[in-house]
Structure formats: structure tokens, C-alpha cells
Figure 1 (cartoon, rainbow, N blue to C red):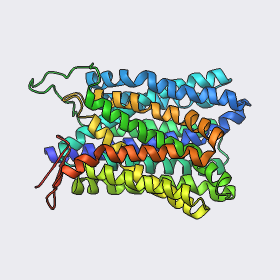
Figure 2 (cartoon, helix red, strand yellow):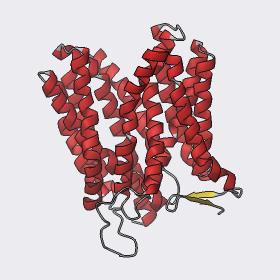
Figure 3 (cartoon, rainbow, N blue to C red):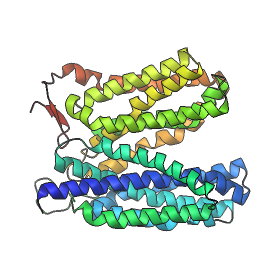
Figure 4 (tube, rainbow, N blue to C red):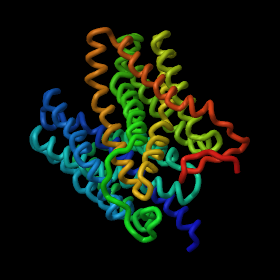
Length: 403
């Protein structure tokens, strides 16, 4: 089999892993109300249990980077996918808030291994193919999320219970992981300048990685804000009915998937710095539209623009983080995920506090400011670039050059 065929198979297999992970997490998330009802939990007890997922993710993320570097991304994908499949049904078998928290904590541990492994493998496939692919991988994650949410609605309408839904989801994860693993290929990198020698499995964050992680923090902060507050904004500020408010997050998710599908071609044509700058500008326009014209229709349009603006930010920043430590992409991705993921954790309390003090409209000035910082971070690079017509992005070096 030729090198080109092997890299093409690895791309298909990696895409399948991203899709299945998005679908499984969506199935788990949309079954949270069933978990609460089955155990008769209060909101406080459910919040405590759900926070265990973030705790497990944060605890394992850095360790996952070292693990992926040591055993290779293909084996780590197999390990992470298998662990997710084994742990997922435990969430439906929990008998109390504490056992549910334990199961969700274990799910966070397992999913962080899979997360770092599949993003690492995606960055290696991208380097082998010689063109940007990370946006398409993340697009399939988003599409998988939409498919998973739709699957839950179908399964529940067929009168299947919580445990059955999670068991089917676990079976799907295990099946995709086992089928995809042989196709992933052994793309484990070696330390630069020392052929055959494994890369280091530990390093302290360097300045470049800290900058990338800071931008990832802002992007994930904005994303979590939309997830938590988009529907509430339509009902409380735009005075929209609850049935219409649900379209806000749906429109945001659809725009994220659509933007990521087009992202690789756009990055290849314009380069990552221009795409990041333009994306931040589009996202800032969306937030401004929501704040200035808080009508239901314009608010939904604003969330669509935010989704388009955010769609390629995380894939691009993940791709940059994978190059922070040459020969050890898993380390850069894990550190970026650990530091950046704090934005996902801090968004709910920060926006909630500001909303309670100043109102939700004024609280959304924070994501607007975050978009402005994201835009400014790459504006200077864009001004200094002179991209020739048909210029191509090199995912190995992260540079843009004429063909």
C-alpha cells in the first residue's frame, strides 16, 4: 500500500473517531435530565455530579499528553475509546448522586485520553497529507453531536430507557474504535534530528504555547457562554417564546459545523492568521448585533455569526499547539487543552455573576471583548503578510507560502 493510500485511510479513520466522540458525548448530555429524574436529584446535587466531568478532564489532560507521546496516538485512541465505552453505561447504573459523580468523573478521565489522542492523530494526519485538515475533523465532531442528539430523540420515542440508550452508545463507540484502530496507521513522531528515538514525554509550557493557550481560553469561554446563555437571552432579553429560544443554540451549532466544513479550504487559501482575524471579526459582529438589536430574529442571526466566528478557532489553535513541541504533538495539545479548558469552567460563574449584577446584556460585553482580543492577536501578522495568489498553508511549519 502506498504512503498516499495509508494517509487517506488514516484520515477516514480519524474522521470516524471524531464523529463517534461527538455523537457519544451528545447522547450522554441529552440523557442528563433522565439521570436527574431517575435519582430524584436536586439541582445542587446534579451540578455537583456534572462538575466531576470537568474535574476528571482537567486531572487527566496533562497525563494524557505524556501517555500519547509514550505509547503513540493510535494505541491511545484505542485505549481512550475502549475506556469511554466501558465507563459510559455506569452513568445509567448509578444509585445516588455520589455514585453518579464517580461515574461521570471516570468518564471525564477516559474522554480526556481519547480527546488528546484523536487530536494528536489528526495533527499527524494533517502533517502527512501536507494540507490543513483539523477543521474538517472538528466539523465531524459537531455533526456527530447533532446526530447524537437526534438519535436520543428517536431512541426515547421508541420507549427505550436511560440505560438502554447509554448501552447502545457504548456499543457504538466500541465498534467504531475497534474498526478504526487498524486504519489509523502508526504515525507516531520521532524526536527531531534523532531518527527512531521517541520524543520526550514531559516539558514545561513555553511562551508560544502559553499565548496559544490564552487564545484557546478566550475561544472556549465564548463557546461556553453561548451554550449556557443563548436560550436564556432569547427568553429574558428578546422576550421570545421558549419554543423559538431553542433555535438559538441549534442555529449556533449548525453554523459551527458549516464553518468547519468550509474551514480547511479557507485556511489553505488564506492562511491561518487571516482566517483567525476574520473569524474573530465575524464573531464580534454577531455579539454586537445581539446587544444592539435584541429582537428574536436578529438575536438568532447574531448567534449564527458567533458560531461561524468560533467554528475554526479551536481547530486552528489546536493545530498550532500540536507544533509547540516538535516531535511531541500530544504534549502541546494536552497543555493547551488543560490551560484553555479553564475558560470552559470559568464562563458560567463569571457570566452568571455579571448577569446578576449588571444584567445579561451587559454581561455579554465580556465575550465581545474576548473576540476583540482574538482579532487583535493576529492582526499584526496579517498586516505584515503578502500572500501570493493561490498561496498554500503548510501544516508542518504553520506558515503560508506561494506554491
